[in-house]
Length: 95
Image (cartoon, rainbow, N blue to C red; front, side):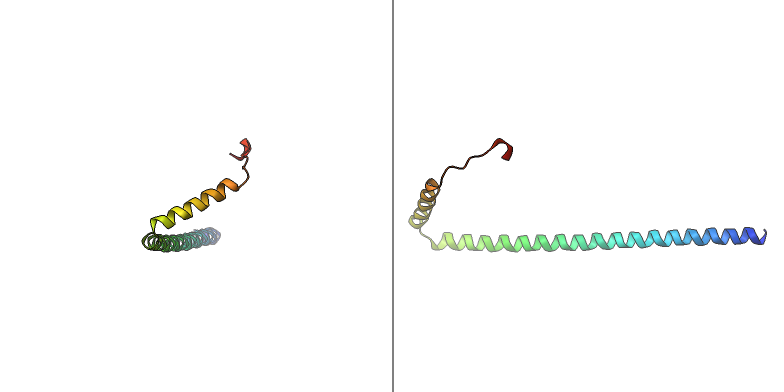
């Protein structure tokens, strides 16, 4: 092999290694982004579960501490309030 052929092969090898290194870096960045997104999603799920648990606790407390007559009064007041509101028109394009 001539020196120019060896030099050309070294340049090709060097360029190939740079391309492979760049691809490896891109894959690492992609994997890191996916990991960060998964962690964010898990955090959101945990937050939602905590909110749901708090809601359940509050609902259970309300049910246990409020008499049925009081619940009926609350419902009746909400119904009267709703009946006092003006009608709401729903346009077909809003559906």
